[in-house]
Length: 414
Image (cartoon, rainbow, N blue to C red):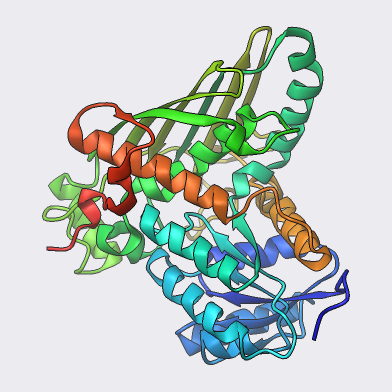
């Protein structure tokens, strides 16, 4: 039975109950025409807690499901957000693909957190499954939807470009002191280290800023990738011990570390053959006030600059003010005292609110999102090229057939 569009509200199901799922709940408070109708997580206590939170926030009515298949097959759900760990995403997409045939009403869309998958092969399979099931699909790359990035791109392309020419260099960096959960630190589960975990943001926000807003991102052709990875902090014995004490016995960075620093230079060209460059840096070895995102866009007679820690609100707390550790001022907060920046609207500034608003509108009205699984695959191809470049010690030219089944060294089993 076909659905009449637009759907109001769009009833979404969340797969996952961790840090990012809670971030999306906060973002969805700023979205109209949406209901969080269901949650699945393999840990009953955590999924029940997220259901209770969604209901308490007025985002429901919401209920727990006991499997991915049950949630995906339910006619109570119109669209699905895949928010679980990297190593679960492909199996969850396969379960969604199977469940679609059991529904009496169509599933309208599926959105997946970054990165889309752990390898290019997995990413291509995610895309194939979504399209074979006839699903609209969205890639949840929040930095593209940051309020600063959206506003900055509009001004540059509306005012700077017509007068002097297109931008040619984008720089993007994201750094913090390390992930929250143990699986992030395991290359065999996460799929890599900081390069896969965070450079997916940097590559895509840079690619987005360099793209003519009247054209698809396929208008930019990737020519080469040069990557560097390193273990700067967490493989040192004293820090490896500290990490193991926090994350558990399975996380032993004296034996099997994943990179905590990565650098990438990607060369591209536009349809007219103009050369473009993306420079990216990501780190789990940055200890400052908290998560730091920095973005620049340079063109012939203009520049854009954004830093998430250059906040309009700062708080000073003297040594007399003491309390428990937390992240109430900024994500990945590293201090409770001193002069500290306050990110007063993290879901908005980081892009989650506009991202969720966009995906909800596209799914409930049948439009194609500006970030799809195609973009998730394109990002994975670049990331795999950077890993391969770092492994080989040379620049990798694209397209490269070797990337199709490439697995980064830290993710190889055995």
